[in-house]
Image 1 (cartoon, one colour):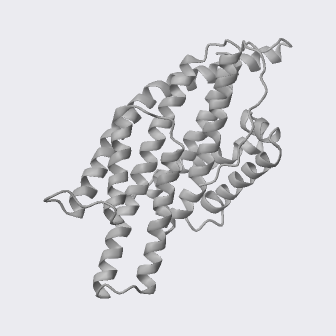
Image 2 (cartoon, one colour):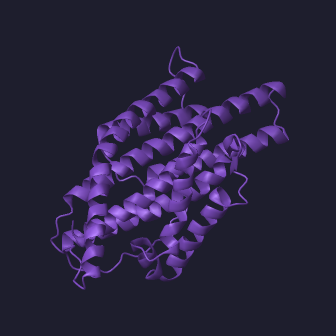
Image 3 (cartoon, rainbow, N blue to C red):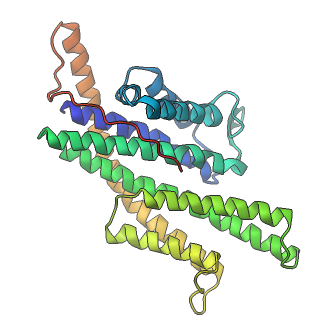
Length: 301
């Protein structure tokens, strides 16, 4: 594994921890406490220690400072000891599902920023004629899975809020109230987040685009920009859209997991070999020349 591949793999590993935080936007009976502790550790350790991510941040000026602050704010609000979103208790991990928007506010822009770093490092690898095909395939698979997870959580929340909005409007006999206005604002924020995920996607394959189109159509149904298909009601199009996302995500997750473990294991072996070489006073084993770190971008949802 050359140096470029090592850097990309560590950045992907970080983005997995960021992405997996979206698990807490799914309504589940219980969450694995050990996985929670691992995500909590992974989110902050990369900026607390000398890592490829920290190196890129430190060489990115003001945007690097913004990204590090965003990561630390993310950790404090979602994983920190004072967090009201995730809280360990005697009966396990408690999740406040009323605060999903706060999770999206942190996760979506951080993941996109790190993803852009990955693309920048891969581009440097191509310029230096290094073999990065394996980690590039993994990077593409991680993005594919991330889009599916993000859309699944966002669309699930959108469906719930849309049902709440219609219920509130029926109760008020079609008149806007503070409650409907509040729900409407949250719906608008969710749609903005969905559009942000879509705008940053690099994927163009037909299966992904079909899912994207289904989600866009659903939003147009909800906002009155498109008539419902003949013979169908909102529960029908909502269910069909979620089913499409789940089918997409099933295959995307299988592809990602088949690639992730072997490459992570190779990185662990490489790090161990490098440490042993340094202990002997030798140069690290990893091949490949150093490259200029890509700059962090000011990427906001």
